[in-house]
Image (cartoon, rainbow, N blue to C red; front, side, top):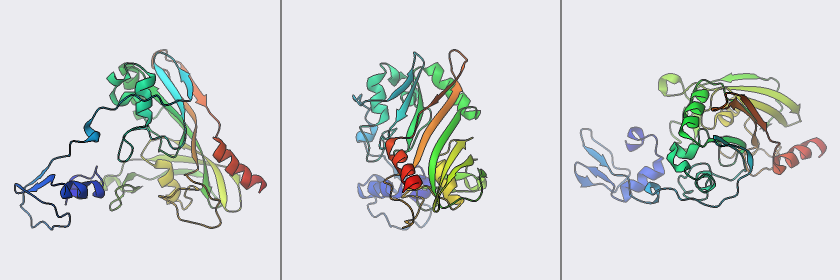
Length: 286
C-alpha cells in the first residue's frame, strides 16, 4: 500500500519507516511491514528526522574543471562520484564539492545542478552558478536544445543503428530501476539516437545522443533493444563472452548549449577516461 502511495521512495526505505514506528494506522503505530489493509484505514506517515533532513556541508573534493566563468561551471565527472546526496551517500558528493568550490551557490536550487550523471557514468556536466543561469539552462533542457553526446560499449554485435523512442518510468516492482513504461501508466517521453562507431564479435562501440534526459535513459533504451551496456549490473546480464568491466561503460563526451549570459553557442568535449580506453584497446588489439 505505501509503495503505491509513495512511489518516490524505495520499498526498503518504506519498510524501515514502518519498523521505526513512523507509520500510524488509525492513530496507532504499525511496525509490521506486511500487514494487509482492509480499506478505510487512516494512514499517517512521518518521515524520520535524520541526516537526510540536514543541510549539505561543503567538502574540499577535487573537481576536474573544464570551463568556468561567473555564470557557468563545466566539470568532467569521474566514475564513482555521486551527484546528489542520497541513500547511502550523504557526503562526498558533487553537491558537497560545489558548495566548497563556488561560494554562495547554496542560494541556487540543488547547488546549480540542472542535470545529472549516474554515479558510475563519467563525463561532462554543467552547473549554473547563478539563479538566472539555472533558470535559463532548465529552459534549454526543456526545449531539448542542449546537445549531449555519450560514448558507450554495448553487449552484442549490433546490426542496426537508429533512434529508440520509448517512454521511460519507474519499474513497477523494482523501485530502484527504470523501465519502458507506457505514457498512460506514468512513463515520460524518451528519445535516444544511436550511431555505430565500431563493431567487434560480441561488443559494439556506439555514440548515443539524447533528445530527452530521463533517469538511466541510455541504459534502459540499450537494454530494451537487447544490447545492454557492458558492465551494467542493473540492466544487463552476466555474459561470459563480454569483457569484465566494473561499471557501465558509458561516458558523456560532448556537451553543447547556449551561454545564458552571452547568448553564444558553447561546446565542450572530453576524451574517455583511462578505464574505457583500455577496454576499447583490449577489444581492438586483444
